[in-house]
Image (cartoon, rainbow, N blue to C red; front, side, top):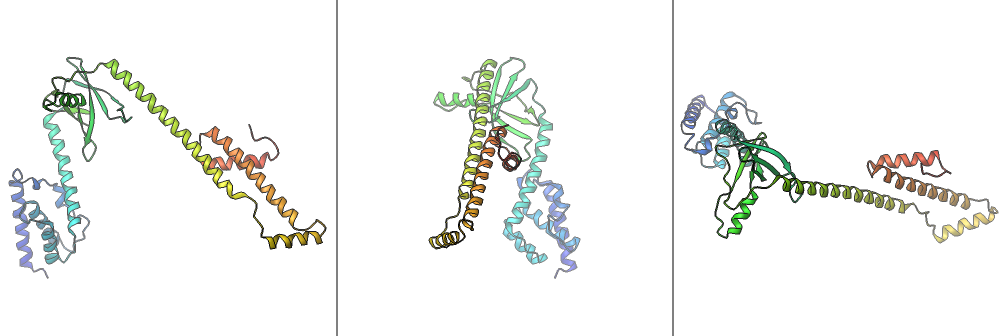
Length: 328
């Protein structure tokens, strides 16, 4: 049971902790939290506003370093509020808060750093693995062109990090592994930074003709790979249809059933049950063969797209033209 005096004491401690967090934010990096963190219940329903203040106060104490572990926070929440909250749940929520804070820091850093002038992003190019992960950048002053390879991006995808692979190769060739390594940061499609990238002494710029030639070759190979994949998909669809039609063979009768049907056929002077049944099976088999032929032809016409539509169209052709050629 939470008493009024205890709630008041906890409220004062939570307010004091909040003030301390703001005063010492530059000292403890764990205090980098979003203000919206205190505005909701994080999916937890609180009975009163006092319970929410106690919960927020405990988490602020953890962010301020007064509570050493999330397990201790869970125990205090259970003792003071009677709520069962696991440590992984609190950890996920705190990670979300830190990401929001990092996003705010990135915006502030961009405002302070500003756009790096004197450099123009020309195009994105394909890498050797056919991914659009190369960034072609030109120095407006020297007209030198460099290519930077994608490394990683921020959580929201607005900030991207690139490095010069030629600098990396130059460092490896030197043997010592020392030297400059040029890198750039792209935020919302613009290069940001305080100073221009510094390249390795042995790193040389790339000519635009070389970049255009390599890019053209890679785009052609990527297009060929895509076409080959479409052809392979058509062949896979054909094999699937052939497997489905293998089960359309006429049913095999047991020796006893065959003898009984033969006797019945003899007694009825050839006008009994067997011959009509065989004729029905043969007709169905021939019809399915015509449908399969029509499907294979339609697959060639439609490049294997929408298999269900192809089968329906084949059935329509067989129904409309049962005795004529299925070729258009």
